[in-house]
Image (cartoon, rainbow, N blue to C red; front, top):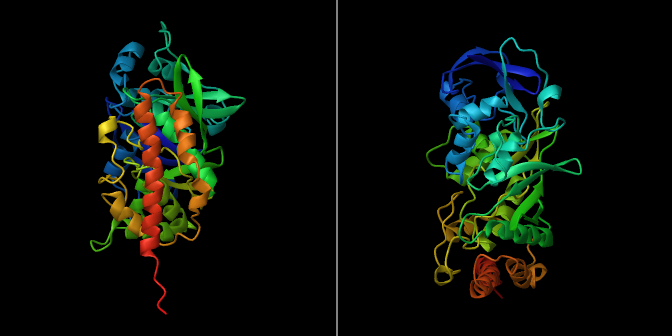
Length: 387
């Protein structure tokens, strides 16, 4: 079946979908400039594999808890069928697919202005089963492994996200990371705790709106061919320069410092990026810090919490010891603003009934020690005065 890929109301391309609801061909190109970032190669060529990967990556990952149970419950074969049921519309960007010869406008279908169903999100959150499900929802295009659902509270689009089975620690990590960023004056998405149905979740307001959309770093990374001699960090900076994304080094510095403090093991190229005006295609600013829950030894038992150990990353380097060396400026960082942050973290963790008090105290201590380690690194990396 053929669909028209649209960016708001700009017709971008005619796409052919196979019986598995996967793009198998670009039938017609209408507007090359408005293709999703990273699809058009540096030499101007458009490879069908890139748009296919973009589409498949838009759906709910199979690793999400209860994913196959929910598909069976709602009688949908796979994530791509679920995705196309809502025209691929998300609350992250302004792309969607419209069946050819069906005349719909962005203002009629987008989830920023229009109501949407909560059925899919409710299904993931173990809520009551239904005979029929309304599949028109932004939950169909939400990424990440943790269960999550979109809601509307006081007219605002809010994302509610759970924790992984076991310690259910991620919502508390999101909340303390918000506090760290707030204290250090780092742009961030503010996460709060939500107590619902006997469990704590994180809740945050959507960072995008009807004017601005999020472009993942993984797509920005494709703006240029990477020189084999360039590191991932150097290449990303070059891509941002090409796209005229301002203030990128300063914002990466701050993101890497926060990730070092919280021992973030899951900062990857799909949970940072930049905010773009979808009509002018101009990049407005680097995205605020968000999605930081997979950190602070969230999946470790008390004996495996080791702030001095090798902690892996998925970003520019393989470990935080290596990545913190990429930070070019610490002049903005004031350790005094983080005094007492470990007590705040412990106070949050005391709400979590899923693990023992000793582990909570150990986590709070480890957070303080990470801050002390950062301070020691900053002192050792400063040029020494020679008299």
